[in-house]
Length: 414
Image 1 (cartoon, rainbow, N blue to C red):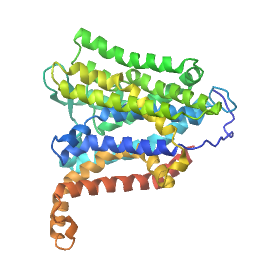
Image 2: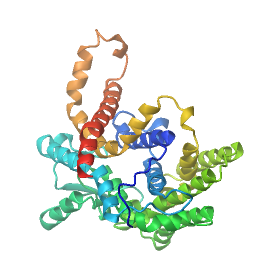
Image 3: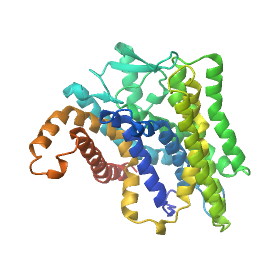
Image 4: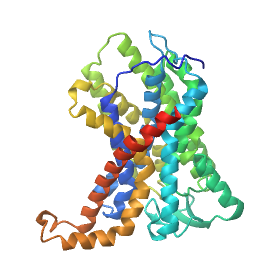
């Protein structure tokens, strides 16, 4: 692509999508950390579908990138931005956060090894990893120590944000695999966006993309490939997850055509989309209950839900949010600010959680000492209060990091 980079086009913001971005990031935080304070109750069950939030985030990323970089004047192409300029802008959004979060995680491993955590599982040092297998009746946690060339390879993949290509295990700041996948989407976006925006049958294309997402799962299940590296490939391989991102671009094509033609979305269409969303989620929850998540009978349910079965619900959710007028929302500036912190939350929620787990005994003792002064806390479970403090601290830290760290560095790099 080539473009006059000074040609800046102001695009209207989707405040509701900003709010959705924040809520998806917050859900991922709860998915990774809430088990620390609650047993597997009904709330724990609702919060156990992190893959739904991650896939929706990929779809939303495709939608927003297409919105930001699409051409004006009814031309269903991208604005002419030099390819390397585009990549530089995208990297400026994520790489400073990656450096900060990686440095923080390494410091925690080295200085506070008891606090180092990956999805709630504490790790003794930088060389120790766990990887999952889905080839038995339970989810096996396999312990492994990386040394020598393997350790150098692992650290190199993490430094370059390429860890999602490792199908065996994840290390350091585990949730950042989703940003590694997003980096691949940035690389291919300029080549895919224009054909997808020009498609004449967007609904059919989205259906095909959903089926393509399901195809690798069907092949693996049919062949009995449920061990390593197959489950790692299905979980996070960027090529396997690419149809979700592409579906988001096509979804924007649907939205834009409706906007260009001046058509408002009929109430029955919004109702139908909400019904699709609710029905798909309900069906997924029912299937998960009917077929336990990690049993031999239920493997196919989990894998299909993870890779494509819920795409109609995710597309409906993003589209309905995009159709909400900004004027209908309150606290619009706050919602925009919170939406901008979503990437920071992905990077920082596990390091901050690790620090909280390390200092939790001190915080609980302090809380109990202040009980006589702060009566409202006296009847509350200490862990619940500490966890709420963790969430508030995380959001505050991410807002500050985005404003005083990411934004200045991004401006400098651009």
